[in-house]
Image 1: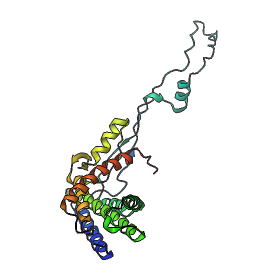
Image 2: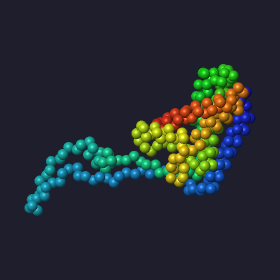
Image 3: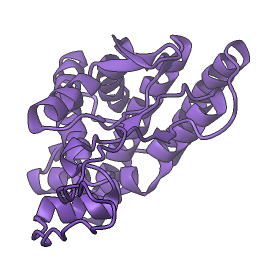
Image 4: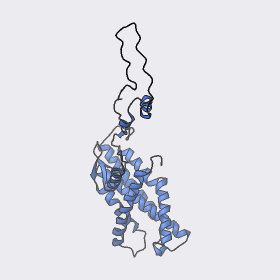
Amino acid sequence: MRITFARFSILGLTLTLFVAASLRAQQDSHPHIVGDPYPLTPTAPPPDVRPIFPAAPKSLDPNIPPPEVPAQPMSAIAKIEQVIGQDPIQVEAPSFTYRRPTGQQQLQNFERNAFGVYPIGRAVIVASILQAKNSPPDWQQGWGPFGERVASSYGRYVVGTGTRYGVAAILHQDAKPYKCDCTGLLPRLKHAVATSFTTRAGDDGHRVLSPAPIGAPYAAAFAELAWYPARYGWKDGLRDGSYGLLYGIGENIAREFIPRSF
């Protein structure tokens, strides 16, 4: 079964309208202040003021000046303390204050995740892998089949992203993946894995187990069956959905440890 632009147009338009309507309904029922939804609130302990040099002994005779204390060499830590005004060992990492995004802001998050440079590049990479594996073999080889695989991979990603944001909007949850404000390999790894099964909820952004990120890979896999060859059935959808969930965990881990500048 060949992919047609009409099918993708109808599917993409329907999905976009569904997500937009869901996010608009959420904004109407839960209005919030429009502004920066993810401000940084750095917190640092009060400076620890400590004398770098010992105090000179006081003389009993006021007319006699106190003896000079020879200058002591400054250690590296003392020099840093003198520059920044506090003990560098006690400096804490900035904490992130969560502010629940409005429906309009969530719609913008969905558009960036579904129609940005990253999903297109991702579709090209996935299509290249499928082309090398000749999957599905019914599409054969060549530039035409490669274009079909790119369109198929991109369409599947858009359906998964739309499902995640749409279901989260209906449940009044925030589906955007956030980096952990913690430090250390294991805490950040645990956070990245949990992102594949949870979303943020409430005004404080606490984590809850959600069907939005869990069901999105399966919705995408079953939607792909609409343009895949007819011999593919629901068992293939379940298998590919499970693979998609595992791939999503890998993407969240990579996103967690890639610098924010990227």
